[in-house]
Image (cartoon, rainbow, N blue to C red):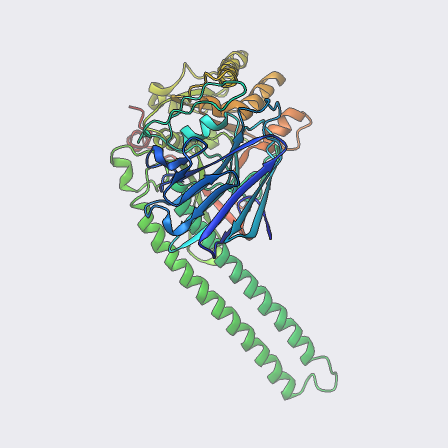
Length: 532
């Protein structure tokens, strides 16, 4: 049996898949059959205790069984979910450790241990998804602090879930809203990790195509690197053997042996480079095709999507990954929205990062056109003044330029998150109707220690109010202030200094990140910062 790690995937070779899970707390098991956008097609695609079957997916006392050949042909994936049993006593620490198990044709095949650490009461454990004509399994492990109601709403199911002690809550399924995005928050690997515990690879179906291309590119790069290393290692061994005998090292035979060894090395590398070039050219074509179909928040700046009607997305594009020594291929680097795992833009100067910040804001605005976006901006140095005009329609009050005003603005967000958590605990939670964005620049300079704690609170509860957080400042991962260091370690860092390597989560190959920049021309800014 394979012990899966977060983000790991494997091909499923059988046609019947069985999912089960266990934990210290009592669990409910359920499943969602979803489309390319990671949303259900209709109410019948949520399989749970009150609706135990849909095409190809059945719930029983033993767990969920999927008959892959019977799953609806237009489905992209089946998400396998556990949540706290509302009939059981409340668990103050959330679900605790969960072990998800998968069997294929009654043979135990894989286990995935999940250790949620932020009080999550609902988890997407595993994802059974199509890849071409095959079916694959991915370890997800994505937790939702807002519980099953938030998870379901994120995937297109409208629910009424009043808390009733001692019995299952009544779940009223309604038609899925066609406007909205998935809320799956995951990490991209790339050499960083969340301090709150192991986090899964960031993959959701709006992002799926780009991340599959990235995975293919990473594996092709790793094969090239491995072949080069092997060829050089064998060359070194053969050259050493050719000169090991002092009596023959200067003879024609030794020279021929050296030349033959070099030819074998060159041939190996040439074959590997040819294979990599073939792979890269195919991926470049696939990316060009995808760019014509992607929503604007994931597309290139030159895509016609920016001139079309707004289209929702479950992610935003941050830049392109590349490696000059491996050819011309450039892979979009994308992350899910809302940014419940904050972005931290590493820079000594907020002003220097203005084009990066502008690009992130433009894409956040484009990602969720069906909901109102409100931006809280903390800008002590006035670095982002040129963005204020275009953003005025979505600013939640004037930008904060006085450090004395920071605490009150952050406290307002914290209180909103606290109220949302209280509503959830009492069974009166309503999923957020707004997309909130907090831009905290110049951090931590000018911020009180309590402000760092407030941002840390939003790190845990921000999803309850639909919050995306962007921090701008120097990397504080080694700060003597424990809260500030924890915050820095918990964020997804975007380096603004050239030459900073990032590492893909599949093979550990090194990549450079070329961040997206918002053009400075007012006309082009107006095109991308669409606020009305």
